[in-house]
Image (cartoon, rainbow, N blue to C red):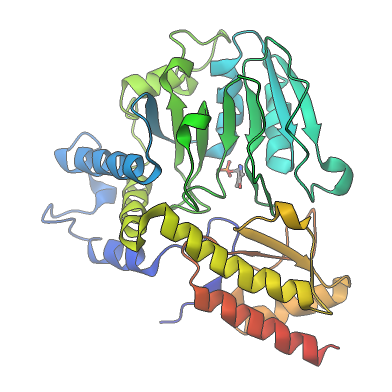
Length: 361
Ligand SMILES: *Cc1c(COP(=O)(O)O)cnc(C)c1O
């Protein structure tokens, strides 16, 4: 068996321990005589899986009791619609556009009300986070929306925007559980799990209870997209993504065993420093993001020469470094170094980059 170093932006690397445990339980989950994939979502065994997943997540993130945790389907993108459908009481919301995912959410918001672009970094290919300390937020805005870590461009908010009292809605798909967060600063903190937590097919919504409306302000909101439907039914109004939730639960336990989110932060900072320090002194490679706004998770870089970029990606692949090609809108390379990427993976990548630099000087 061969395992590569997988730098994919998502679906992405998962802890080997988790994969092994899942493999061991594949045919017979703890004496049930069946796989979790084959199990009724109404069974006691599955109820325990989802309850324990929620309990562990609450513990890891220190989620206050007045927040609901929902395990849903439809990907992060589906919530781009569900958020305005559930939250646009006054028909108005502010969006900070720091990349493609925020832009898609903003465009979706425009379908259901007045989505206002409060700030943007599109003028410089989303290579920075705009100053959000004193935004012009309308008095009657229902929420302020951000994408906290920009997966494609490799930027991250180091301080949350001043929302002037409006609920903050943050897509944390690509920085979920990468470091401690203060959940009480958010109205909604949510993301797809396929970047940093589990297999594609699950989206986790953490929503302050008072933001879950009895009746959605947008009439004809599909039953499935009403947060209340999902909250009232413990994420099981219909069949949930059972196997995905099971793997997420295992990842939560793995993070707890590793020392929780403080330990994850230290682990992620260590890896990011190895790569950024190399980029900062390299004569061939350079990072594309303003230094203060660099992500711990997604690290885009370029040589400045398209052909050389392509050569690098090709040779890296042959050497066991997978998925280093940058997003099609940015070009160059991107190394995603999520929680499950070991330090050795980043060290090996940097050693390879050094060698490539020498050979192509
Ligand atoms: C990947 C990603 C998405 C899209 O997720 P889907 O589950 O494919 O809809 C949205 N936001 C961010 C920040 C992402 O990284």
